[in-house]
Image (cartoon, rainbow, N blue to C red; front, side, top):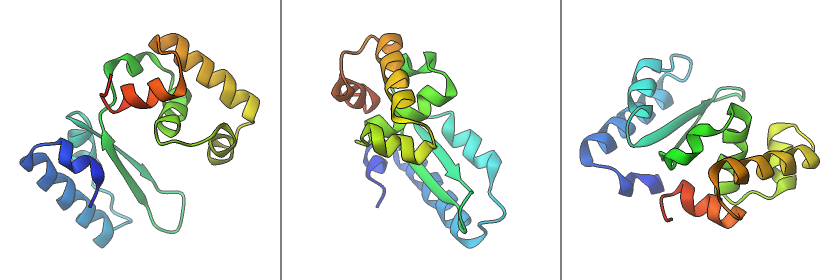
Length: 127
């Protein structure tokens, strides 16, 4: 079960499950309209199609203070919230650790958060 499904209503849960089933059955025919519709709601859906099979990431919609971030900062914040270290983030995004540190510093400034722990807590609506 996807952990964030406990945070959303039954109708949205049903849509997410249907979407994930569709992705599993027809990975080359990603239902983008449904992704866009669901992503405008209470959850955020990201699809990584770079591997042999697409991977769908479903997470709670982050706190609105993250709206001010650039696309790359948003990616870094996603991984910070997931508990990745700077080295792991750099490896995942193909950037240097120094660049990750710069992004984290910028994220903290733009969101008015004091630490990586606060980024994670805010991401999941805990503060």
